[in-house]
Amino acid sequence: MSDCLFCKIVSGDIPSQKVYEDETVLAFRDINPQAPVHILVIPKTHIDSAAAITAQNSGVVAHCFEVIAQLGKDLAGGFRVVSNCGPDAGQTVPHLHFHILGGRPLAMEMA
Ligand code: 5GP
Ligand code: ZN
Image (tube, rainbow, N blue to C red):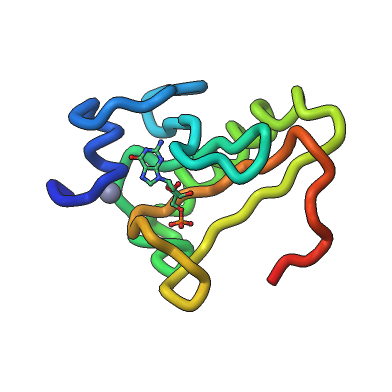
């Protein structure tokens, strides 16, 4: 999608601090970190949100979680994975992304 912020990060039109990249998945640092470690993991193909995951595109979503497991293993104290879906959940970028949050004890409240 030409007007999608994260598609532009995938294409390199918008720079990012990449921490992992392969053929189908990209991980980069959040521009406004909410924790000492705040990484976004995204499929390179455009998927609107978690509500748009289907049997046809879930392979790349599974791969996102393989990448999350690899990136998270360095976070000895644990980490949280969050995907905001839709306006009430605070999704601001309509390209599926998984936040990895860690590097300190996190608040117990999830909502
Ligand atoms: P959401 O609110 O949709 O769950 O998460 C979107 C995230 O993208 C936010 O945490 C926000 O800080 C991050 N973000 C927005 N614009 C950019 C950008 O241009 N570069 C990077 N690296 N992160 C961004
Ligand atoms: Zn996109």
